[in-house]
Amino acid sequence: MTPASHPRGRILVLFSCKGGVGTTFLTTQLGCLLALRWQLKVLVIDGVHPFGDAALMLSPSEPKATLGDLLHHPERFDEALLESALLWPQPRLGVLAATEHPLLDGTLPRDGWPAILEAARSRFDCVLVDGGRAMDARMMALLRVADCLLPVLQTTLPMVRDGRRLLSALIAQGIDPLRILPILNRVNALDEPHPKTLDRALGTHIVHHIPEDAALVRECITGGYVLWYQAPFHPISQSLIALARTLIPAPEPMGNPPRGLLQRWWKKQWRWNPQHL
Ligand SMILES: Nc1ncnc2c1ncn2[C@@H]1O[C@H](COP(=O)(O)OP(=O)(O)O)[C@@H](O)[C@H]1O
Ligand SMILES: [Mg+2]
Image (cartoon, rainbow, N blue to C red; front, top):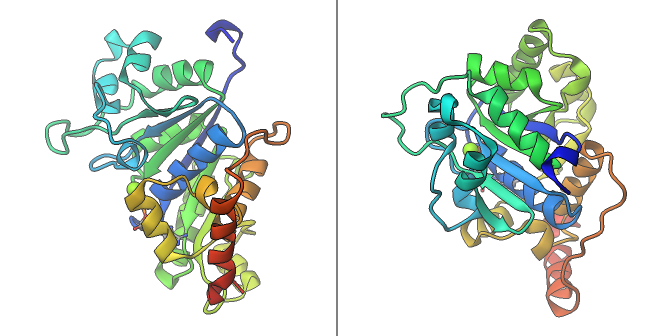
């Protein structure tokens, strides 16, 4: 499909009010899922500054240019420059790496965002941005144009309180609540408050819960695995599939994970894990 005839891709931004809640893990795994199972052309943009690591989780290669290079030189920006900056860990999955130098780049200008997002959505079916935890003017400029805002929350008390503050602040800024789809990550059914208690505390109904499995997620990150590909029946994969179905109003997925021994081994792994019984 030529860029001219490509329908506008959806822009989805994952972000959080604290670091370490799983924003990057979920952005990268969701990107892989949409590219492999949904067969969509997906771009993951690492918008975290400083110290973004989404590209590192997806590809061992060094990028030729980063988001910082594109934002700092809006006068030079065009679609060819965007294309030349991308890494391609999968044929349908492009990655725009985060700004490299934490100090030299200083505060990133926000005026370059609209051109980059326009170019990205005209070439990709879906643009996933890892927004990290910054709640500044640059982030708001991004959130205003996004089709769906995905704040990643956890169930700890400080996180619930900050999550409520974050959601109220976004609505006070004029963001349509229907565009906000909070995700609760690292849900461990054994020691969680009741979902209704959480909904009341957060002031909204949270539909998407991603279960906790520290060992598997660690293995996935260090090994650079696509979780859905390696463990399609794991509860985290299944929750990500349910989330993707909500986000992408497209026909049923076409791609399939490998079958046979590998799949059976993984099925056994999580069935034998008492946490998932
Ligand atoms: N569902 C999960 N279950 C267990 N561990 C998780 C889960 N999601 C994320 N983690 C862990 O949380 C840590 C932080 O994840 P990361 O995606 O880097 O967070 P952030 O981008 O919000 O700082 C990672 O080390 C990862 O292993
Ligand atoms: Mg991160």
